[in-house]
Image (tube, rainbow, N blue to C red):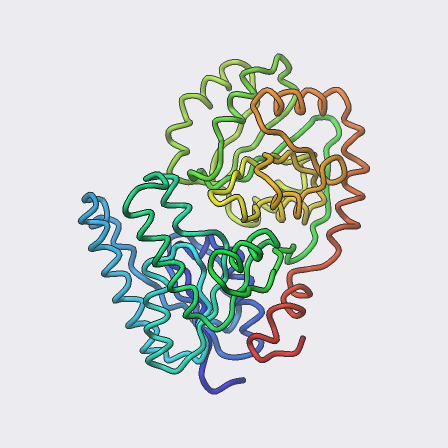
Length: 371
């Protein structure tokens, strides 16, 4: 073990950050490790890792732009203090959120002579643009800040080849593509007496959950039992519409599941639905990886070239772009359930590598471990 630890940083709920937890599970085998982030939902931390929790300051953040700025400042100071106190030799941060994560991590890394590594899940400025618009002054300032901070790190990972190319072109940095892979593969336990589908969701702005609800309203068949998992800021808004669909005869379940129940549900489902649309068009849906871990085909929203790195149309899933196209797909699956079986076999062929194997090949050398 190295004398100085590593720090894995998420300015967000650690329980909702599976990729960073996967990083931590691999890093803890190389050196002592701190997980730094919000602890809002229960989760199982990697054995041997210490948790350094951050305070969310959400009450302050609810008071408009000024409150949000104060909240970000408090989190920045808190994160900087935590990192300086733990004195890591390497700091791995998730982006987004860009601010205050990159600023605090870079400042601490310079102070401690530590290495800063960024794992690019998406762009912070593209997430801002979904709320404020691309021409808003805060969005433009965020983009410049993100570009400047990106060049301060010594190493980078990203989730897709499309993002790798964009980072090189727009930010002038070289990132290694580290694909999300299943931590382990799950055994299916399908009930052929009924057709079950799952839509794993974070209920955030980069998922078009309304498209699924509209597709269900268009269908005349009610032969699919549908589970909408997860929780997030937009779920309450959808509750009246979900209630109306139930009243219309849909067997529709919605709610957050603990990890073991979520994995068990994936194994019982015949297919999944991904509404991830990507604010940048460059990131990939972690929930699709969860589905493929169970050998479950997916109907995925087609948001461009990046998603084709993950889903093969007609082989491991289907693409759609409108509610009408999704409704037609669901109707076809009801009529032709046999089309799913060869897809399950193809998924097992295409997704034979685990996260550990991918991480050892791509990431381990960055952290001084064997490849």
